[in-house]
Image (cartoon, rainbow, N blue to C red):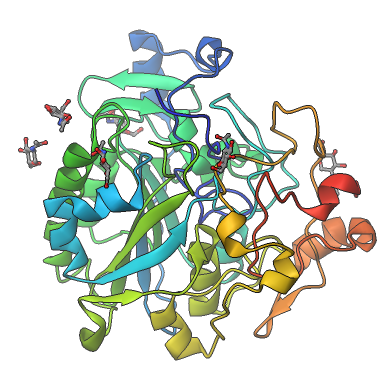
Amino acid sequence: MLPKVFGILAAASIAAAVPASITTDSGSDSTSTSVTHTSTATSDIAAAAATAKTESPTSNVKGAAFDRILQIYLETTAYENATADPNCQALIKQGILLTEEFGVGAPHGDNFGLNSDSFILVNKNVSTIVDLLEDKGISWGDYNEGLPYTGFDGFAYDNPVEGDYVRKHNLLARFNSVMDDPDRAAKIKNFTLFYEDLDNKRIPQWGFVTPNLYNNGHDTNITVSCNWTRSFVEPLLANPYFNDNTVIYITWQANGQNPIARNHVAGILLGSAIPKELVGTTDDAYHNHYSELSSVEANWNLHTLGRWDVGANVWKFVAAKTGDVIRSWNERIAGDLFENYYWNQSYGGVFSSAVEGLHVYVAPNTRLVRHGRTVLPSIVKLWARYCGKLPDYYRDIIELPDALHPPRASRSPSA
Ligand SMILES: *[C@@H]1O[C@H](CO)[C@@H](O)[C@H](O)[C@H]1NC(C)=O
Ligand SMILES: *[C@@H]1O[C@H](CO)[C@@H](O)[C@H](O)[C@H]1NC(C)=O
Ligand SMILES: *[C@@H]1O[C@H](CO)[C@@H](O)[C@H](O)[C@H]1NC(C)=O
Ligand SMILES: *[C@@H]1O[C@H](CO)[C@@H](O)[C@H](O)[C@H]1NC(C)=O
Ligand SMILES: *[C@@H]1O[C@H](CO)[C@@H](O)[C@H](O)[C@H]1NC(C)=O
Ligand SMILES: *[C@@H]1O[C@H](CO)[C@@H](O)[C@H](O)[C@H]1NC(C)=O
């Protein structure tokens, strides 16, 4: 049984909170399994599937370092175990290995203290990467293996064709700003549609992929997930339509095997957008799951969410094109040695079961500017009046707090 490490709120890339698979633990939260928000009866699924709205828009917005990104989040696995697997090693040789990558629980910009597998709904006033992408006309799509139909919001589904799906791994599905918008829910699709989109040359520029519980290693192990990932990814790399100035990012939601270990996970960057001379090398800068957000923001010169995305280091191969400065951990700013940070437990927040902490949505810092990238105007409009009460939260820093070093805002409520 896995520890209650960080929950997942996040599809890291998603925005304020979505890092993808950060979640994934084993369902130790007893309240979560009883929650069903959408019927999973066969007849109801068939009826809903018949009318589900699906959209697959395309776009062609040039990026500084890549024109397409596909992200794959796998179940909790320690760095050492992922990098020891022969199939993952074969992938690593074809790209860049991120050697100092740490799970946070949610790549969306904030995990809001999530520490369980519960059915959560993030308030619609919390933005995600989707808002940033749409602002610049960049197409996006989210592909979840086992999802019975587009926009399905149920807690789980045992799909006889695609395998077992759980909502907790579908990071964007947790955001009301996504699911309450029919045109956005229409882009939360399954694998059948991934292959249809691939065949019809309409894979979006920003894509998120969540394999089922077997293939992502949740119900199995790293042998299965690396084998699956290699067999999923290699045909895409060989596909000239798909792999056209494309990057594929593979990561693991958390280091779950050992709760008292640091949340050190592997990250692999692949695809034709990786400069030839960097194939087979490593990026040893400090990264966490928010680096996926900052790298996407830098690549397309997007606005930001004003959360942990702002300060996160940009992947080096992207920074080389955008001019973003790579920073190293500053013990003085963090107030304690890097070695004392574990990121193995969420700090108090909206979704935390812990009594202590700040159980409200903390405002983003709408004044942050990173390398010329400002906070999305609609976020500034909504939140600016709360941000005056944010003395130290969300500064432009890479020094991400953990439960042992909670953000100071958790002691000074703001919104
Ligand atoms: C993970 O790696 C450690 C040491 O590197 C090893 O002791 C352990 O058995 C591995 N666990 C799995 C599930 O492979
Ligand atoms: C995938 O989604 C589509 C669109 O909603 C649906 O018609 C189809 O049945 C789903 N495929 C599987 C295998 O569940
Ligand atoms: C990994 O999981 C698969 C599928 O359940 C199983 O066949 C295999 O024995 C497992 N391998 C290890 C090392 O546990
Ligand atoms: C590895 O992947 C291949 C192709 O998807 C599959 O046929 C095979 O069963 C997988 N092996 C394991 C051990 O999961
Ligand atoms: C996280 O790791 C630290 C250091 O090993 C440990 O003291 C703490 O109890 C761990 N937290 C959890 C929830 O396991
Ligand atoms: C966002 O929604 C939450 C939950 O309803 C609420 O507490 C908060 O005041 C809202 N913030 C803003 C800026 O609207």
